[in-house]
Image (tube, rainbow, N blue to C red):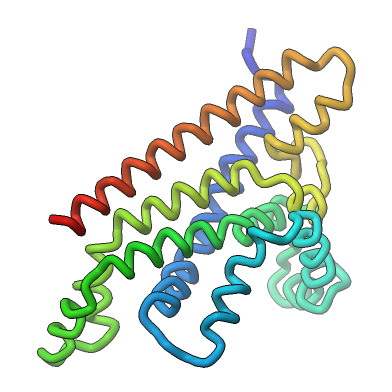
Length: 230
């Protein structure tokens, strides 16, 4: 007898799929934004910093509602994506990826930014004086030093995306086998009498995955600290 039912397995698999894709699609932009915030001085820097961290302070339902206004099938961006690329986000698992990526983005950026700020700028300046371009300096000097920070940011973002609920359920609803992730499946089971056992199983899975992600993130942070101090 299977430990998980079909809908529970579907929710677990979809949650992992959404979390992986959320990290993958936000990582390039996350590295770029973290570098800009850590190394550049420009007008509007604090505004950019506030916008990046806005999902952390906004109610997740508000974020989901804004996503509906911008990326719904009749919204300007959503209609353009559907007509041009055939990409539908609202009430699809792809929309869950977008919602999770936005909610996890601040954690990723913060971790990578701290890693970049820990790198001595004199190392980058020395490479530039030897004629290296900024991109080459970043790729050969900065990037190798901040890899633990990038990995830690990815793990934190993965954990956040895995547990995302408010923005996701607002933007893509709670459709079993289509958009139902672990948190929304737990929410649905809590409304059904006699489903305590299934709820507890999903809660244990969610806790186990989150604890593992946090342990890996802490290990990466310790490695980064040792590398910088060394």
